[in-house]
Image 1 (cartoon, helix red, strand yellow):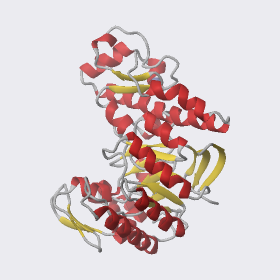
Image 2 (cartoon, helix red, strand yellow):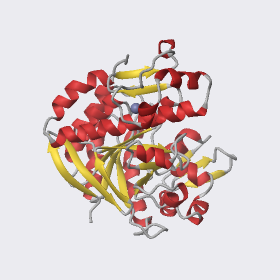
Image 3 (cartoon, protein in one colour):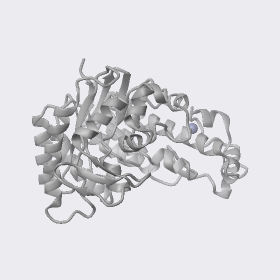
Image 4 (tube, helix red, strand yellow):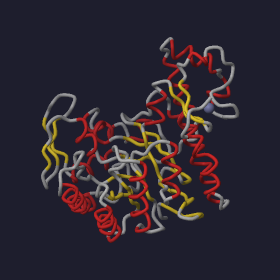
Length: 374
Ligand SMILES: [Zn+2]
């Protein structure tokens, strides 16, 4: 059984199905980020109830604490964190580059200082695969070389080509089944920054390797929305229609709608959960800042008509009170709504694609979801 089945296409926008050893997920899909083996502030049951079907784990964080062997001893990431659905783990590379102190990248891998105890360690493609094999996610990501920003001249090409060589080492190193005996699908990552020729070279090299899925990395790092769109329009036509495309770390609701129009199937971003902890929610009519005094006596739900647990039960006035009193429940309830919103956004996009009216869906919703709500 292949990982992905394409159900419908409308322009470049696609509706499909991911099928893993831990169940299925309809695409386009938004995957919730569970950095430390938990989506912050919510239980796995609440995540599922919110409509989320795929959860991410961060290899770097789990590798440094509690350690891959401990996770494997506790049954793997699915069993340990009690998430029965599909999971994806990243390579650990991004955190090594962004969190650790001095690091030195060589052809061998990346030397880094563990941010918890300062111990020097080496993350190689083989080590990333060994850790992800023990964690046991359904989809695992190759280790790629991430250029600093802004990338010095020439570095963008060097890191992209090194990432292709590291992909080959990842493919050679990953056992056919996880430590728990389940299938793992290795995605390659298209790199090349904003240089479209490099992006095309990267995509072509990856496609030659006939991977189960393709990610587009290195975006949402300060480029304009127009530049992001340019990269997506250059890359997605080169990717095979029968495999899923995953845009890493993106982003705002309007980014998702635009990327879906370019043929992207999978997304992850810390945004809906992170901003919820800072009292902001997304709605179909725009963003709300829930600490605003205007909500003090509002008996309305966050979003009238929303079927999430939070909107079915609580008023804006109560939610604002919880946030002002710094009660944990306030963050939990806002996180539930935001996850539900992202799940509903991708489900709505899917429905529109299947009905052949995705362009109208975008025209109707994009200006509003990107704006300030009421
Ligand atoms: Zn809601």
